[in-house]
Every structure is written in C-alpha cells, then in structure tokens.
Length: 196
Length: 388
Image 1 (tube, each protein chain N blue to C red):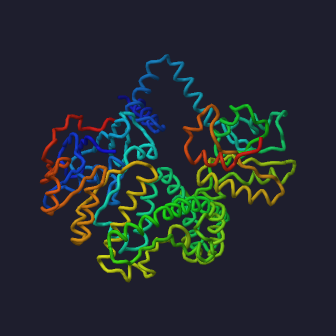
Image 2: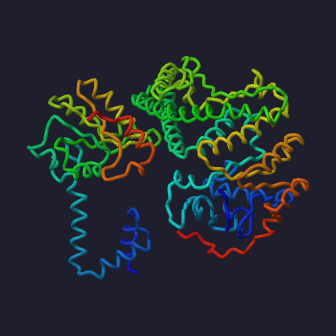
Image 3: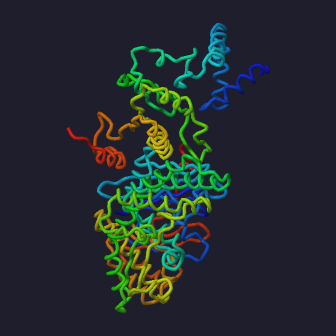
C-alpha cells in the first residue's frame, strides 16, 4: 500500500469506534469515490479544525465570536441553563421548550478524573452572572455523582451572588410505564412530586 | 426455584460439561483440590454474575481458554435460560438468549444463598467481613441496592481523593462541600438498606440461634454506627432525611481530622454489625461452638427471610460446611436440609454426609481433576467460544 494510504488508515483508526478493518474499508471507499468527494471531505475537516471555536459568552461551539443562541435576540437574557457538554445543549435545544441562554462547562467536577473547578469553564459564567440581569441559573448536569456535586457547587458559588439556582427535575419518562421505570428514578419521582 | 440444567465451558479447572435435570439435593464428592467448590461457584456465578470468593471476574476463566461460558435453565413459574459469558475481563449476561441484560434485572431470576467455610469470618473476622456479608445479603433481598452501593462507593472515593489532595497541598479544595453532599445523599440510602435489613433479620436470627444452640443463651444483632450513636439517632423508623443530616453533620465535624488523615473517617464504610450473646460480645466471649452456631443461624435466617419476604425459596449452595461445624451443628444442618423445600447443592469430603446423596430425590456427583461424573452428566454441545 502506498504510504499516503497507510497514513490515512492510521489516522482513521484513531477515531472512536473505528478499528483497523473499518479504517481500511473507509479509506478504500474514499479512494473509490469521485475525487471531488475526497477533496470536499478534506476541506470540511480543515474548516472544522480552523474555523470552529468556543463562543466567548457561553462556550458553545461557533464559527464566529458568538454562537447562534447568544446572537438570537428573541432569547430570554435572564435565564441561563448550565450543561456539561455541547451534546447536552443540543438535546435541550431539540425539545423546543427552552427559550433562555446556555452555558457549557465542558465537563463536570470529578476528583477521580482530576477535574476540579479550574478545569471547568466557570470564569465566564461567573462574569455573566456578576454583570447582572440574570434571574435564574438552571443546573442541567447529569444525575450521577459528578453531575450532582457540580450542581451543588454551582448552587454555592452562584447562590452567594443572589441569583436563583434550580436543578432539573428527575422522574418518569413521558410515554413510559410507571411499572417499567427503574426503582431509583421512580423513588425520586415520588419524593419530588408536585401539587396539581 | 431450581436449576434444571447447567452447562460449563472454560470455567476454572472444570472440563466442559453439561448436567441435566439435577435433583433436589446434589451431593458433590471428591478429594480436596479436584474442583468440587468450582462446581458450586459456577452456580453462584450463573445466579449473580460474580465469583464466589470475592476474587476478580477474569480469574474464573480457565488458564488455557480465552473466555468462559456458564449456561443454565431455571425453573420458576416459567422456565428461563440464563447465561454468563466472560472474556477479556468483560462480562455478558443473557436471559432467554437475549443479551445485555442489566445486572439488577438478571439477578432477580435466580436467588442463591451460599454457605462456605469463609463465612465463619463474618463472626470471627473484622468488621469488613460483616459489612461485606450485609451488603451481599441486602443485594440478594433487593437488587436495586447494587446501584445504591455503587453510587456510594464512587461518591466516597471522590471525596477521599479531594481529602488526599487537601492533605498534600495544605489547601481545602473548594468543591469538597459539594462532595460531602454527594456522600451524604448516597450514604443515607445505603444506611436505609442496611438498617432495614438488620431490623427484618434480628428476630429471625435470635429464634434460629435459640433452636440451634439449645443453651438458653440469646443472640442479639444490631446495626452499629459511631455516627448514629454520637448523634443519638435511633435506627427504629428513621427517615432518609434524618440519616442524610446525620452523615452531613458528622462529616462537617470531622472535616479537620479527615483532611489531616486524607480520607473519610466516619460513615457507613466503617460501621459494624454488633453480635451480642446474652449482652456480651460474641466475637470475644463466645465459644467456638457458639460462634459456629451463630454463623449457621445467620445463614438460615437469611434463607428464611428471602422465603418470607420474596415468597421464593432460594437455591442453597453449601461448600464443605460440615468440616467447619461440630457433630451437633452438623446434625442440625442435616435436619434443616431434610425439611428444606428448595434445591440444595453441597460439596463434602465426608463419606457419611455423602450417603445423603443416595435418597430418591438426591444424587451424587464425583469431581476428579476437573472432570465431573455421575448420573445426568452429558457432553457439552455448545460452541466453546463466546458469542460476542
């Protein structure tokens, strides 16, 4: 195999979920396709590498200074939803329920992985809250040990600044059966019940 | 509930084998070191997905094999097939040939209670042995306890990592308080599971001990926690909120010393199960015989509790237990087994006990150098490799 091909295979096999066999198959697919495809793929890759950066306000992905959510004038400035990752942000956006702004931490507090407050994007969040105009911060971190601790940390950090910190609810999924919900989730749903 | 067939490939030193329609009582005989216990462990592993003796999972795979498979059919209200596969340190659990079943669901199907010579350590050994027995027993009673236990371990390890960091740098990590909360929330759930179980069991254990020892001495067990005692929290009818508060307050009070030592010094991870014989510590003041009677009472009570609460009779696994008991307790155990309505698998080197395998509902298997022989033993007709 020519060195350029083995280089491509080696690079592809670094991708998550891609073994050497699949990398071979992908490389040959690129080779067999019209050359325009390979060039377009290369261009798309370099555009991502050179063009995509973090939004200076909320740390979402963007190709300019400010992300699409932060630029949208119809969004509620007084609400910030804090998430662990961009994927989480996209999931909440898909619901169409939320009209406030976001803040992406790019991780959660995890002593076992050596991630402390310094490793999270907290400075920009603090600056946004200090600037004023923020009424509520929603902690939408994952409901595991790290996510729960991160939300408690946010509560302590931001509560001192006079802003309401809320936690997303946990409970039974819509369209699901109570019978089939796992006991921990169901237990939380019962203890966090609300009056009708 | 009973295991009606068992198939093994690549499991410890045992040669591939299939056992058909095992009886109510199976007695496994053979010299030491031939693989008797491994057969018992295979059933334990089929039921729980875990090795019996607290070892690591990859250790159950035969040295000359890449992976191992344990298959079984279980007869309950409906027949179910179960399978555990282990390869490269990973485990796959299958129910009715459907893969990727969660441990909580898988372990609901077949309930086993194992009794091995190591269990004597629950009475004689350190508090850690008692916590381990307790956690295992609570889990058998309620599968959801597994996730409670996992969450607590992770929260505690996280907090300990922060304490060690604080000790090394001389600065209190600012996120420590957040992980105090995580430990308190998870610890309260763990406490609730353990305390509820001990309360369920206390009377059963006392009754059983009374029947077994016949000496008029009474055995009392209770859950013992320094934190609960120092804050005067009674375990009777205690709520999760109160337990959470107790743990939070306890950690706050000890923060200085925890930071100096680099780990969490109080909480469920250092608690104990107190066993008192007419008011005196069983471990220090009990005779050998009394300690053995207590272990037997603990095990029998565990079985009876499962029958009472889950309305299901677990499969009993007894590994060379007769060697650890004196003739009196042995007679009691055999009497109990004779009247036991569920399935029993037991290993022994004692020819007298082996004769128990001669009855109409019983059968005897011999294990020699990893080869199982006896009635109902067939050759294995499955693919020797794991299916994933």
